[in-house]
Each structure stands twice: as structure tokens, then as C-alpha cells.
Image 1 (cartoon, rainbow, N blue to C red):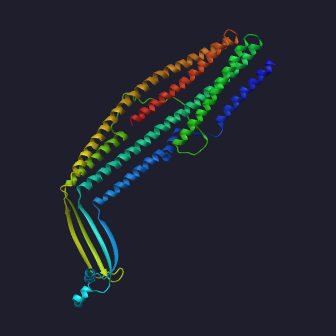
Image 2 (spheres, helix red, strand yellow):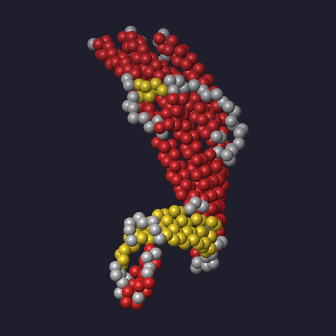
Image 3 (spheres, helix red, strand yellow):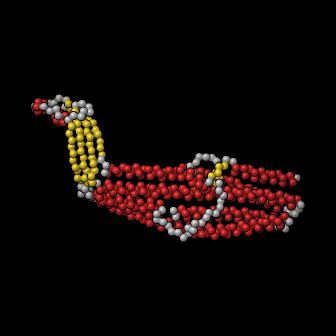
Length: 440
């Protein structure tokens, strides 16, 4: 009876292992890190949004060409009137005035007249110092948006690498747990055999059963973590595929480029974006100051007035030059200058604070990388030692020289040290990738 029950439990555990293993093979799509990075650079939604922001700012910059390009418009106006003044004026414009039109009776009580006015108007900016500074300010905004787009691509690149690392760690953890479950099932068979021989107690067998159940639960959690991490990577790639992603490359230690002693560069794209923002504010301040200077604009008007639609007879022109100088506007410009100065100071302070924070983050990450390297060496030694402990304990357990609890403890310790080692590899690789990201 006891043998049948044990056989059923063993069969169920083996079935769970088969199902858990096969679950990872269902709807799995392998992907390399290079493929993931390429897809993210082409399809990531955050990158696309940043690119659209750049397009918008470029469009605004194109609008500032109005500061030096002419404004040309064509109009056609149809009028009908018996107003004495307009009636006589239309006749003059149409070049149809005759001597009888000066008759007071005709002037005071004119007949109805139609007029079609076709006009071409041209306005040419000549001197608009404030508009030129505003154009430079927008150009600096374009430079800032370019830098932001570049840094966004670098950030997504780092996120993809991190998520890919997490996926590698998840599969590695699942592999460790799969092997741990096989070992637990083998020990279960052994414990049943020893129990039947009367060498161990029933409680020892139950402890082994509990250990099997714990590993099975960890396997289920590992499976869910793989699915969740795969979904996160698919999101970064902007992919709608339902397949579970699996790294083509296993989790291995990344080479060290000796970045621990390198310093932060102010040419990093996000720093350049701050610098461009400061330049933009400087130009906006100058634009406000230049509002005290005069503006010069040329204008001309060519028109034709006839009694017929789109007639091109009776043409005339009007050309002029306007010089405008706003000497005082109630203190509005003075107040705006003070506002722009404060905004410029704020932008400068923001940049200095962000730069200082970047230096702190760099030092922190360099220390983390150094700590991760030390922890990695210790974790590797711990795996070797715990594996040897498990080997010795297993041999002694088979001989009836070790308690079941000692064997379970050795198994758990070896499993934990393996997981700790791969976590240490992940921590080191992640710290290295982040350091590279900070030193771009």
C-alpha cells in the first residue's frame, strides 16, 4: 500500500517536471541581443515619440524664416456702390473719368458703379533684430531635441540590454530549478527505498515530499517570471507577438572594459540638451532686449481696378518703407527682460544640478561594479564548495550516515548558491551596462 502511494506521488512529480519543462518549449521564439537592439531602435514607441517631438520643433524653426523672407498675397475684391465719394474714386481708379463726372449733380447723386479690385501685396522684412534672435532660440531648441532623441535611443538600448539580461537570468534560474527538481525526485525515490528498509523514519520521507513541493512551486514562479520578462521585452520592441521570447545567448560574464576610473563627459547627449536649452534662453533674452531697437520693413502694393472680374487694366502701384521704433510700452519689455533673466538663471542651475547628480551616479555605479566583481568571485567559490558538500552528504545519506534534514539542507544550499552566482553575474553585467550608459 505504501509502495503504491509512493509510486503515485513519484509519478505525479515526474509528470509535473515534464509539463513544466515542455511549457517552456511551447510558443517560444529565440532572439539575440543584437536582434532585440535593432528592433527596438526601429520600433520602440518612446523613440518614435521623441522623433516626433524633434519633427515638431523643426517645423517651428521653419516658421521663423518669416523673419527674413517676403510675405506675398493676392486678393480680389468685388464692390458695388452709389456712395458719391467711392463712386468717383472707383472711376478714377478704373481710369474712366470724363468731364461730365465733375458735374455737381452727378457728383452728388451718382449712378451705381461696380468695381473689381485685383491686388498683389508684398511685405519684405529688412531689420528685425528680435526676430533673428528668436530664430536662433528655436534653432537651439532643435539641437536640444536632437540630443534628447539620441539620449532616448541610448536609454532604450540600455533598457533592452537590462531586460534581456533579466530574461537570461530567468531561464538560467529555471534551469537550476529544473535540475534541483530532478535531484529532489531522485532523493525522494532513494528516501522511499531507505524507508522500506527501515533505515529512516516516515517524517524523513515527508520532509523530502515537502522539499519536492517547494521546488515545484519555485518552478512555477520561474515560469511566470519568464513570461513577465518576455512581455516587458516585447513591449520595448513594440512587438505584438504572443510567443515567449528566449535569449539565443546564455547568461555569461561580460568582459570588463576597465571603466571604473573614467570620468563623466559633458558631451553626453542629455548634458548637451541642457546646454542647448541654456543657449535658447540666452537668445530669447537677447530677443527681448532687441525689442528696444527699431524695425524696418518694406512694402508694396500692385493693383488693378476694372468693371469686369479679373480685369487687368487701370493698374497702379504703391511702394513704401516703414521704420518703427517702440520707445516705451508701459514697462512690458523691461518686465519681460527680468523674466527672461530669471528663466536663464534657472536653466543654468538645473544644468549644474543635473551634472552634479550625474557625477554622483557615476561614482555610485563604479563602486557597485567593483562590489559586484568582489561578490561574483565569492559566489563562484560558494558554488564550488556547496557542490562538494552536497556530493559528500549524498554519499553519506545513501550509506545511512546522514539525516534526511542534512541532505535537504545541502540540496537547498547548493541550489541557493547556484542562483546567487547567476544573480551575481547579472548584477555585474547590469552594473557594467549602466556604467557604459553613463559614460556615453
